[in-house]
Amino acid sequence: MTSPVAYRISGVMHDSAPTVLLSSGLGGASGFWGPQLAFLEADYRVIVYDQRGTGLSKAALGANYSMTEMANDVIELLDHLAIDSCHFVGHALGGIIGMTLATLAPHRLASLVIINGWAALDSQTRRCFEVRLDLLSVSEQAYIHAQPLFLYPADWLSQHTALLDAEETHQLAHFQGADNLRLRLAALMNTSFADRLATLHLPCLILCARDDLLVPWTCSQTLAEGLPNSELYLFEYGAHAMCTSDPETFNLQLGKWLRKLTALQMS
Image (tube, rainbow, N blue to C red; front, side, top):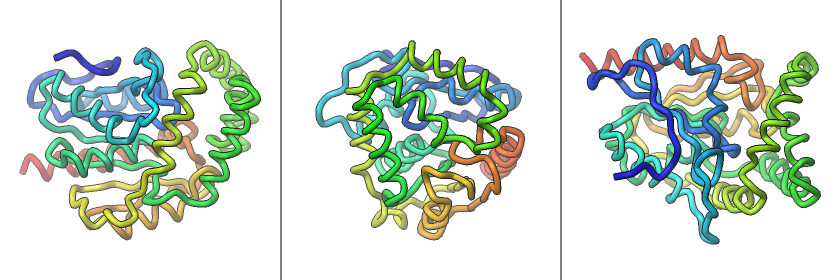
């Protein structure tokens, strides 16, 4: 079986090593997880991948593209690698992929980490997505130029101008394309777990940031209240992409969770 998506596997490679699979947000590309790789590779087999239609996973998506297709790509990737289950870490859209996967094949997940996710689309998140679609209708460059405003704290933005300029150039060269982005965003916006949270019994860690402009932290609070076996950790700083803007705190909390789950599952 071939993999449906481009991926990278690294870290501890022996068969008994626990696997951590990282799934990005709307951008879809594996490069989002750069600040986490070295930290995780010391103790885990780590998988990152470019979601279908993004990065090196070049594809024109179908008109009815869905979250189920995104989750099935993960199942096929695990099958390709002969990995029975993984700790799934998903950022925003990636977290929704994780919840979809938990409904389709819960035995493939040892745990689920949802970062700045939601059970149902909040009006603030919808407004941000609509603004981004308006920018996309102007040009891909307008969309990419504005993107950091939705991801990072203002002081972090002002301190990382050179990094942001370089990232903008990279994204322009490797953009997933307006059609793919619209289809992926439509699939995301049309998905709700509001009436299904109680059916997801796997261990879940919910991470969110109080200063997130794109997804209000209260959406994560609702997730934690509805998921039967969950824990919530609220970052005071870091905004939507706090795994980049505050990687030390993020890695610390993720590491605590993974060590606890690994110890429980080995006992």
